[in-house]
Length: 587
Image (tube, rainbow, N blue to C red; front, top):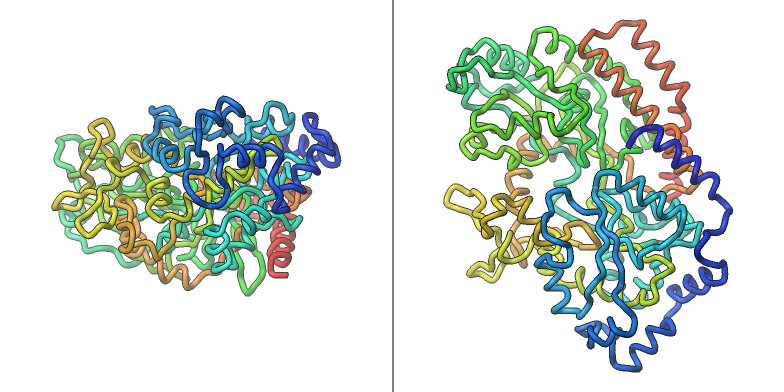
């Protein structure tokens, strides 16, 4: 989102503080909130239970007579941020059909495109006009901030009463993991919506694999690099190595990165992977973007992009650039022309070294097999890699129920059905049986692979795990997958097996043991408004100077100017707000 949009929304939020929403009266809102905090059913819930149309006792189906329910009450409306690669209508997804067969619930899906979704949702909530009964999701990692922003307007129902009184499966999971209760608690003490938890042995806590072309290494007579300097020497050898990919064209690129990337897990921008090698790891993570460039050091929130290590990393990348080792397209703002969307989709290897979220993004399987993960590289004052300011509880408040919803306990029971069945939760998250899973001889759901460990498409038009996933399920919602499910109910998801292996080769375990990150915390509304004003400006200052330094070099004057700009933009406020939030969650 553009900085101007953040500021406009922040101003809108500040103006809304203390104002009642246009659609609901104060009495309506207070009544709806009081109801979900109690064990009493709404009038329509009680009516439907008495008529035998629905059941809220934990048995299935939840809606016993879907036609009668639809005729009398209509369908429960659900807004969903739709994936750009989804071509199947949401209601026709295989998992949506499974949910209906099991629960009798057929949602009235209201999809909006991912592009521009945050602005549209914020404007919808600000006006409080024609709200859906629930928001299935808000975009990756965005739910917590949004529900806190608008909770004071009485738009979202608190859910801790529903969890404690009507959701035994979810309650058990949270009670066994108190840190998750902390992460979903808003500053006002309530929870809003239900969490999305994807435990994958720490998969989302570091970026995806940092790769190098092993075929090219062999051709230039080099071993796998173990230091930053050896990696740079490998890039130089790739530049001077001739026709390494064998296509008869001088088109080899030593290294590509994506300086403007804001991806969820901090995978594509190699700059930050190297800051730790120069003394202090800095991080970015689109899933928790307000915490970019922050880290806990000795228990204190610290803005690490002001550390001298940042300057040294810029100088190192400038050296690579001045030698022609960095692809010029690495500075593009448009993701569609980035290397992840172009160069790694070709039928011949083009890049010597780069990073991905998952190696399955390399579409040609022969090209894919040329790449291996780079070990954690030793630098002058440390080692490469950083840990994300993130959590395996990736969204605190998906499936957030609005005060317009007259059947909040149906929604709660539905979520509890999903999270209470490991197979349903896993397939709802990663793709249906017949798409990304088959039932193996041992009864465990496994992703179909060939003898080389490559994905076998089960539906002809979906030739990879990702497209099969988004066209068979909604993906992120309020699903929960726990570490203990693996090899008991499901096999480890296919695209993530090699992803995790690559991360571990990159030094994942040591990185996570070495660094303490800023925990996921929910901010107060004034804090969020202030963050929306200053953090995008701060992030832009960092991004702008990185580009200038990589292409033109860093000088004392430019470094001092950078530090002054950051101070003027409010870095001290950013750090103070996060410190206060961290201290608040610790009680």
